[in-house]
Each structure stands twice: as structure tokens, then as C-alpha cells.
Length: 513
Image (cartoon, rainbow, N blue to C red; front, side, top):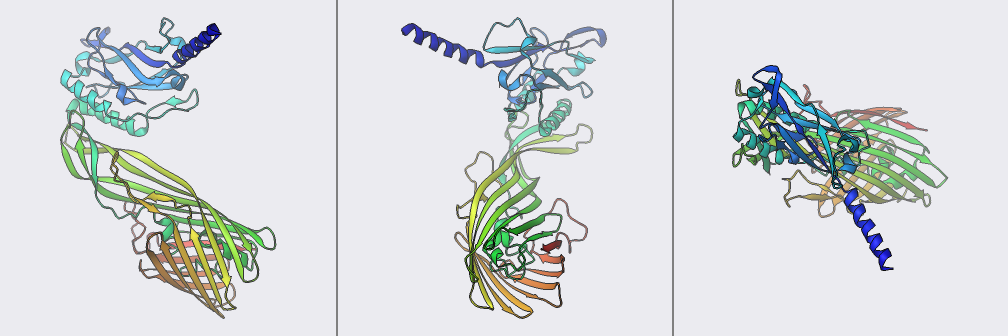
């Protein structure tokens, strides 16, 4: 029995040792000796950077000349059957900067260490005079220090045979460092402060029913126009005069809404839809040097471009209890994505001292599942009320960008409560909506719509707190609207020539069948 236990334990231990293999890439980088193509020697003080893990960067040695050994920091199971890239930093601006190596366990058959997989790079040569390629000792150390401060790329799970190359941001930064080696005017900085911006993060589900809509005042008790009922009060779908619908409202720049519903039985309906918003702006940040070339240097008010995308997808079943009451439940997936500043590479061109800034941003993504509960009630023939409790699970979205590795991250709770009342009198409908967030009153809106003739609808509405308004006209299946959001949605990076109508003209369709 003891022998069996010992045997099993030994197998487990050996399996752990064999299965974990660090990939080591080694070789000798050579350069032309005295400019003679047939005479070469090892190139020293050349920075070798594995693109997927800059922290593993090394400099070629003097003894023996040109030798390098890069411990990639990755397990062989993650790198096997992948192409990886080694980048070099030299004084030579025209030298080849990248060498791609295929990782395979058969490339170094002399290795007997089961914990390491050695891959040898053979015949790597710079077609440049050694004196024009090799870096001075101090500059080599400084650039190596800067490379060690760059974050690694996550390549875990990529399919065998796929490239383990650097992201575009790393490649561009390495190319800038190559130029910097000649000018010695480069620095790596981390973000220390982010200035206030105009973009309001995490409120698109609050602003969309009150401000960015052509149905202002009617979204929580919708009656005549049900094109946004899927989002804000799904229960109202059960009172539709047409069993099926598909609707679109978009400015085709930064705001799109697409929805529809379908009658399954006499009392049961199901709706689906999606809302997408996009914003961008340029705002300022403060940075401090962290690399050997820039340590302690402070730059304030550096311009940084940022982009925010927010999206929600809805599935909304509704049930008609009787001719007066209906109930709805909405399941939704909420997404938020934006670039958050992390590192800044600053450089000056050696010829004309033109400054260059290159950001390495984190991509922040957040996704949550939440739900709404809605109720509609026809008080009498001319009054209809609606109530919607939204995001009952209390999903939180980021309220702004944040300094990396800081605890100062703010969030906005998406839970909110909408109430609406619709008054009907012949061709004229008057609607009022109010929205309350989890801890405060958000906004109230008043809307009016009017049927001037068959298949026509004119609507206008005003949101009091945001001081925004909408005017729309629908003719049969197609509609056009002017929605003034009072600069709630920001687009500074790509600004249209005509700012009056920039992003404010919406169009779409409504098909009832």
C-alpha cells in the first residue's frame, strides 16, 4: 500500500514538473564588423524585447559578444505552435526591427531540463556596421528599464498556430523607442490625475427615455406611439392595436434604437430591442516619469482622446391581464466600454524637436444582466397610467475614467423608477413622465402628440431638468425628428461642420402589421 501511494505521489510530482515548462529563447545577434559584409561579430548592448511580454526584455551581452537569453515568462503550453516576435532597439533606424520565431519543442533537442523549453534563434544578423547599431552602455540600460515597465499581453487561450504578436500600441511604441535611441529624447510616464470632462459616463439608461427620444413625455405610459415601449414599459405592448411591430430611431452617428414586438397568443406578447450610444472627447491628464529616461519628470495638462460606448439589449415578455391592466418583465444585458489612460510615451524628433505623445490605454469593459418590472393600467377611456421599476438587480456602471491602480473609482447605480400618465382627447394626447434614480429625482418631461390626418403624427416634448426638447413628424411608416439634448451627448473628436444639426437630426421607421 505504501509503495502504491509513493508511486502515485511520484507520478503527480513528475507530471507537475514536466507539464510546467518555461519557454527560453536564446541566440546570438551579429552585426557587420567594420562595414565588411563577410566579417561579422556579436552585437552588444542591443535591446531584445519579446513583444508579448516586454518585462522579459534583455540586452545582448559582451561575453560572449551578442549573446542573449530571454526567459519569456510563459508556459510552453501557451506558446507551442505559435509565432512570437522579438523586437530590437538599436541606433540604426533602417535595421530590421523584428524577428519572428515559431515555438516548437523539437527546435532544441539538446535540452535535458524538463522544466524549460529552449528555442534557439539561428543566423540573426544586422545588415549594418556594428558601430552604427550598438547602443552606449548607459542608454542601453535606460531603454531596457523603460521596456521592463510595459505591461504584458494576455495570449492565453489563443488557438495553436495563431500569432502571439504584440498589439498595435506596443509595436508603435517600440518603433518610437528605436528612433529615440538615436535622439535620446524619450520618456515613459504613468497617469497621476485625470481632469474633469464633458462626457457623462453611465447615464445612458437614464437619459434615453427622457432626453434622447422622439417620444418625450410618453415613454412610461405609452399609448399612441409604442416604438420605445420595449425599453421603458413593456407591459404597454399588450394594449397595442396592431399585434406586430418593428421600429428604428437613429441619427446614424452616436445613437441608435431598434426594437420590435410580436403577439404570441391573445394575452401574451414578446418584445426585443437594443440601444447603442457612442461618445468621444479630448481631455487633459497629468503624468509623472517612471522610466530611467524620465524618472521624476512631471507633465500637466497632456491631451488624451477617449471614447465611450454603451449598449443594452432587451427581451421583454408582456401579459394582458384584462382590458384594463397588463404586466411586463424585461431581461436586459447592459454593456459599457471605454479606453482608460495608463501609460504615456513622450518623444521629441531629433531633427526638428517635434513632440510626440503615444498612449497605451487599458480597455475597460463591463457587462451585466438585469431586469425591469412594468405595469400599465387604463384608469378610464381617456386616462392611462404606467409604472416601471428598472434594473432591479442594481447594476452599476463606471461613472468616469480613473487613475490606474487607484481606489478612486466611482459608479452609478442603474436602478431607477419611472412613472407616467397619458391623457387622451380625440386627436390630441398629452403625456407626462418622471424618472427617479436610486437616490434622487432625475428629470420630468411633458409631451404632446397630435394626429393631423390619417397616417400622420406630430409630436413634441420638453424635459425640464435637462432643458432638452424633441420635435418629430411621422407619415405612415417613416419619421423624422429633431432632438436637442442640450449637449448631453458629446462628440469632440469628430465634429461636423454644421454644429446646429450635428447629431440632432434623427430618422427612422415604424411598421405595424
